[in-house]
Image 1: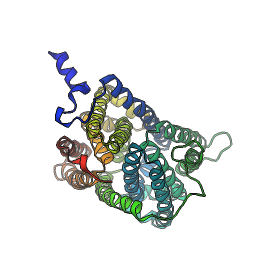
Image 2: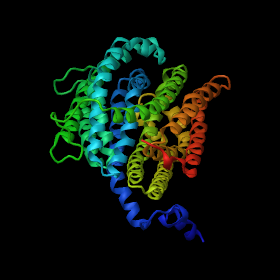
Image 3: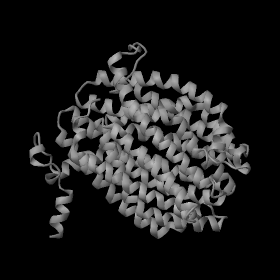
Image 4: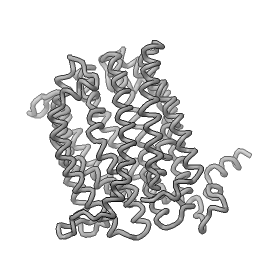
Length: 470
């Protein structure tokens, strides 16, 4: 009986209702294999980047809790600056995946060219604003007097190469949309390794390099961004690239493509508005609990980001396969690959949750070896997060499936409600009026993730996303 239940949960034979099938459903081994071929490089990429980000925080952590806070508090302002470009990338993913499935690679390349032009123009504007308003943004994020100078300096330096980061991000999401996750693995992992090396050299000063502290971490990120840009550009300038761009291509705007990008980007902006406001407000709630609580929060977030990367890598494969099969007029296969992605993500989450419970204090001690109070609090937060992980991974893949189909408006409204409103309001209420402090703020994440999963799964199950237009 148990094996029958297990088989029904994992077998592709039971994932699509007979009345929905438009053709043969591939056997489980073949379908899971196709998903894994795209997902594994993406997971390796995402996990490698997260681990190296952890190493960055560990390296900064030798300077103390204030240094961790100074770097960590720039996260939400940085994401705020990136929000427009994240929205544009959502549109790029949906359009290019659909065009790839339909065999319209000229249209896919046109989409990439339009996006690069838009990103360069908007990126220059964003760079100027980010550098000019570094201090006000840090104050808005809750930076206290003891960390604001370091935070503003770090934020200013990393934004010098904002345009390069944006262009790199756009090329990478375009490559993922057509299933070329090995390319993005190469681009980001090589760049990040170089960034870790320069962190080692510049934070404390080694082998004749100056000891720049927090600024050293910022310059290491700049160097990594330049390397990533060079590798990303090579991936689309190469003559054998499916997304090859050339100077002799037509680089003007075309109304139909611009309209498609604009419509999906608008929905992406709604999503980003909810995410950025929610994350920003929530980070401000945690920052108001003090530097030690915020440092513990940043440490626990590193593990959260690591778990997120598994789901994000699987979600990249799912998004690509859902969009491509809709382009092939096979919505039944889109349903199947969406369900496969969710199952793989939940299995990963259950394993990671067990590791998180067992080794939570060991994880925390790596980041703040000289702050036992921070380690204890971070370990308690990781215990809470162990219960969040399966909810987080499942809803991330469901959201990716809907975005790949072009159903970006519903995802946007879901994020606006749960992340934009529920998380900061509940986080503040539990942290302060209820007096639960940082633990209360993290309990709000469980409620947020659970509500998001219910909404996205219900939408996916009803199947309205199948008819979404890009």
